[in-house]
Length: 360
Image (cartoon, rainbow, N blue to C red; front, side, top):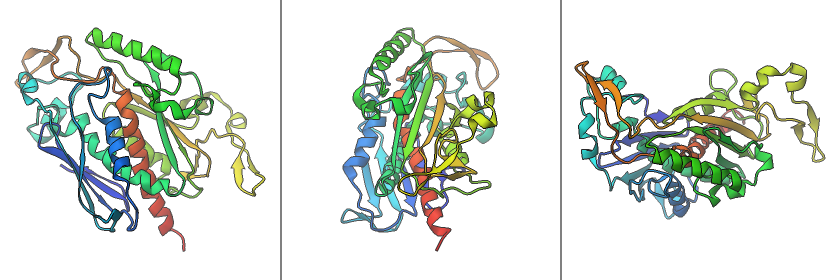
């Protein structure tokens, strides 16, 4: 299996399965001398871990990270950083009933078509549990970026038809973790939680949108052809399980505007910096950051595993009924927030090093 590595200079490779011994990641290219806060890494893992509230899967995993290499006396050495996260609460028997069945909208059939066999225990590598390794790596990247004053803040902007209806500038992003939904609008968060619990009671699932806001990225990051900054962000975010859409800046709303309305006019601020009066470009022009806030939205579908019976077929092509069992999220959004943060951080850390390599 290829496609387990992300990045050019700041490279991460993840490994492991949902119901195997554990998961892990190697980080190659992290500069030497970075003081790592292990508690901060564990804090990000806690934001993603299952069982953290009543509106997420009740699988109990501590998701404790173990550093195997690349750190000495609290600082990175420049050598590959190895991290492992051991599984503790896998229940493979929960999946024995679907070992030869194709679950609707899962990767069961496509894995069989590609590889000739599959790990049916929770989906193996296609399980959202794989993202635990990404969050661990992303937490390292965030500390690298944090030293430059760069912040990454994602939050739940919409669940089903319920949305904040506000721009990120109108919200207090300090409230993101003040509720289980991770929506910085308390009133909207309460409505979202009520809807998620209602959907869970019905044995169903629901989707929504995560918005990410990145501040402090200097002008000049990104490659102007195939590796545009927004293109790399899009690929990284769309690689997250259940993500079905990505837009940055004005996104699809921009199609209803004229160029005269959409263009971001430049000006020089009181400190002599080049700025734009509006930011419909989402902080990126020509595939390169322009120094303004970078922001994007990611759409997540309803989780494919539901309790209700569904019609499908088995590996022999016979009609079967698939019954949902196991422990699953009724809505992936609250736990997707730290994953979006992590993937954005990995892209930015990589482009940070690439930008350094482009100039004397």
